[in-house]
Length: 297
Image (cartoon, rainbow, N blue to C red; front, side):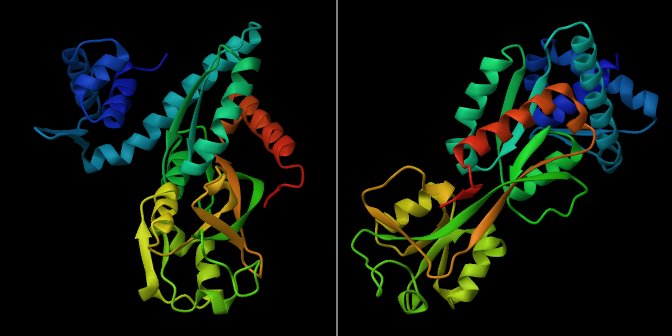
């Protein structure tokens, strides 16, 4: 199997310290330090910068990290293939997901998957759309849920079209009584996530002539709902983001329907691992059963 130094290096970068890496790998911090020193001598250049605030990669270290991560991923893939040949089920699936997918989908998906494959370990990381795409490209996660335009050379699977709604304080009623029109958005202040301003939500803002000076940025979906509830403005959220009913706000469709596309992404290497393939099948089954028409509305 590959050098322990590779795994030690990646763990140190992910955890930000020798101490935390040593706890995860069940060795001493000095063993971690020794293995990385040995790797630096073998390569002939420094990989890590060490200081009181933690550790970070040198420029040379940044260049070689993707290759080291790919080596580790291939080793994990080999172990899974060997386990399958012997008639066993083993492996780890690392998933990246944005907040509403973590809340609304992953509990059901993980429960279903564990019932079928109890020996496969699942790791979940919540992050932004852009970071999920980057992590999938680098192989730090096996698959990810994302919505942003995907420019990386990744395998992508369209899961659902998620309808976008206007979230209003409870007492608000659209002029036509049932949907939001341009007349309803005049002089209104809107609250949304910074990342949404360059995504699918931007199309809605442009269509309904929402000016940039009438927009406030929030942290996440739940904080948007809380601010709308407090009367600070209106929100624009896709259906998945407000699955839980809230008696203090109302969700109205726009008079012209808009959707965001939710994709499952993975790179070519990770897609080939048996555990990842099983998880992809599980996710597809969950989505097709939960949303038979592949649309959230």
